[in-house]
Image (cartoon, rainbow, N blue to C red; front, side, top):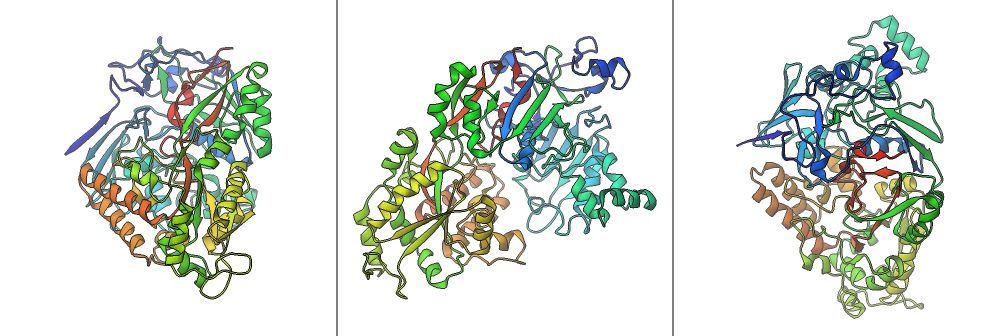
Amino acid sequence: MLKRYLIAAGLALATLSAAPLSAQELQESAFWQSEVDTGNLPPVAERMPSAPLLVDLSLKGREFGQQGGTLRTMVTRAKDVRQMVVYGYARLVGYNERYELVPDILQSLDNVDDRKFTMRLRPGHRWSDGAPFTSEDFRYWWEDVANNELLSPSGPIDFLRVDGKLPTVTFPDETTIIYEWEKPNPQFLQMLAEARPPFIYRPSHFLKKLHAKYADEEGLSELLYEARVRSWPALHNRSDNMYKFDNPDLPTLQPWMLATKDGKSRFLFVRNPYYHRADTNGVQLPYIDVVEMQVVAPGLVAAKANAGEVDLQARGLDFKDTAILKKGEAGGNYTTYLWGNGTASQIAIYLNLNYNDDGWREIMRDARLRRALSLAINRKIINKSLYFGLAKEGAMTVLPLSPFYKEENRRAWADYDPARANAILDEMGLTDRDKDGFRVLPDGRPMWIVVETAGERQEVENALQIVIDNWKDIGIKLIMRPLERDILRNRVYSGESMASVWFGWDNGLPQTYTSPAYVAPRQQEFFAWPKWGQYHQTNGDAGEPPDLPAAIRLDELADAWNRAYSAVERGQIWQEMVDIHADQVFAIGLLNQAPQPVVVSNRVRNVPEKAIWAWSPGAHFGMHRPDEFFMTD
C-alpha cells in the first residue's frame, strides 16, 4: 500500500500554491535589507526554495503578521539554548495541530508499507549560510558520520535498525533520498518529528573540512591546533551537534540561528535569511526578527514573568505560579493562558526495580507492594492542595485524547483505600513492626523508603509531605531526599537510588503510529528499570536483561509492534501494553492534566489560547509554530 504525504490545499498546517510565488510577490525583510543592498546577501526570491512551504494562516484561524521585533524568553541553564531547536521545530516531517504527520522541510514523501520511504527535498533549499541543502548532506551523514567507527562507535542510531538490520540508503539525485528496509519500520517518521529529532543529515560543506576523508592534512592540523583538540573526530563531534545548537558557525535549517558566541547569560537568535517557509502574502517566516534568551535562576522565572520581563514563557513555570502571574497581568502587559498538559502524570513515584539492595529489590518487584503504596495515597487532598482541584486524580496511564485511554486504567489501584493497602501488605507477610509502628522486611530492617527528587519543583515536595502521612498509616516511612537533577539521574541509572520522583511518560497521547519503546523496558530514562533500559540501549554491553514476566511481555510486545503491518494490529499491541502498566503499577502516578501556565505578552499574536504543553508529541511551543507568532510593535 502506498501512502503519499504531500503538502496540499486543505491541510491546516500549510498549503502549497499551485504555482510558486513570483519574485515580485515575495517581500524583502527589513532586517536583511541592508545586507541585500550591499550585495552581501541575495534578494529573498533567490534565498527561498523554488517550491517554498506556503502557509495560509486564514485556514488556521490566525492573523497574517508582520516581520520585526525582539521576543524575550528565559531558560534556567546555559545549555538550554537547545530549546530553540525544540521551539523552532523545523523537521523533515512534523506534526500539525491535529497530530497528523506532514512534510515540512521535505517537499513530499512516499511511504510504501512503512518499509520504503522516498523523501524529496525542495529544489533550491539552502542552509542558513546560503549553501545548497541537497541529498549530499544526507549521504555525508549516513556514510561518513553514522557509519564511521571513529565518529559513531556504536554505529547508526538505534531506531534505524529493524531486527538488527540497517536500511539500504540511496541517493538517486540531489533532491531524492530513499530509506528501505526488508521489514516495516513504523517508527521512522515519528522519530523524525520528535522534539529532539535524530538529524539524519548534516551540513556537509561545513563539516568536510573537519573530516580526515575530505580535508587536507595540513589544514586539518591547523584547525586542531586552533581548537586545542587532539583528534579530528573529537573536533568534528564537538562542532556538529545540531541539537545542542551551541555552535554559531554551524549552518542550520531552523527559523532562527544562534548569533552569540561563547554566551553565558544572554543569547541572541536572529532570523534565518534562507528559511523555507512563507505566508501566502509573500512574507518570509519567521515573522519575529530576534529571539533573546536570558539565563536566570530557576526561582526567578515566575518573578521576572510577573514583572513583564518576558514576551513568551512556559518553561520554568508551574501551576503554583498562576496566582502571582494573574496578579501581575495588568502591570506587566501580558496575559496568562492555561494550557493542557501532555505528560502522563504530573508527579510519579518510581520504585527502582534494579536497586542494588537484594532484600529491597525482591520486595519492590512484587506488584502487590506497588499497588498497596498507590492505594494508600490520598490524591484528592494533593489535588486540592496543589492544583485547586483542577488536575485529574488517578494512576499513570495515557490521557483521554489517546485512543488507548480507559477509565478503569486511570482508576486502577488509585482509589484512596488504606484499609485495602494494609490488607495487601499483610497478605505479603509484612506483618511484623518495629517499636515505632513501621513494618519490617523479612531480614528485620524497617520499611523506610527513601524517595529522591530533583529538588526543582515545589509541588513535588509538597505532594510528598502528604504522602509521608499517608504511608505512615500503612506502616511505611517515606524519607524525602532532594538532589540536583544530574546527581539524581546518575544515582537512578547506577542502581544506587531506591525510589525517585519524576514526571510520567513525556508522551501521554500515543497513537497507533507512536513507537511504544518508552513503555517497554528499553530506556534507562524510565526510572523504574534503568538497568533493563541500559541492557537494551547498549545491546547487552551494560545493565541487566529484564527478568520479570510482565517486563518480558512488554519487550515482546514492542518487538511485535515493530513487525506489525497494520494500524489495527499496532493499536491492539499498544492497548495491551497500557493495560499491563495499569495492572503492574511500574510508576505510581498521582495526578495528570494539571494546567500549564503560559505567559504571553499582549504585543505577541497568534499564540493559541488553548493548546497542549507537551514534549512529545509537540515539542512544547514547536508544534504551534512560533515562526508564525508576530509582534504588533
